[in-house]
Length: 63
Image (cartoon, rainbow, N blue to C red; front, side):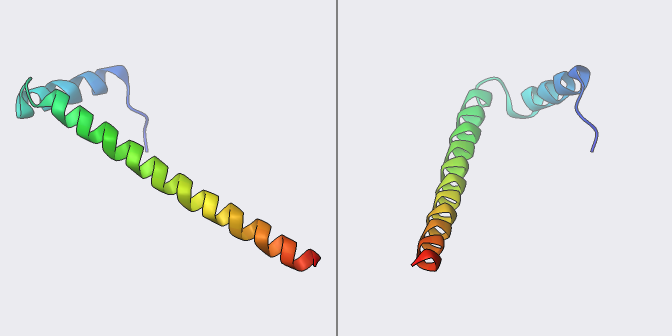
């Protein structure tokens, strides 16, 4: 996968502006940000659960 250059990002932003309009873009950005935040929290919770399970298993093996 090729990284996006500055020109590509500008073109994508202009197309999004034309499709959704200037009034909808802030709402879409806010929704995307909250979705990303929720996803990060969920994956962090899963990683914490895995860490808890590993430490519990290690403690059982030592006993």
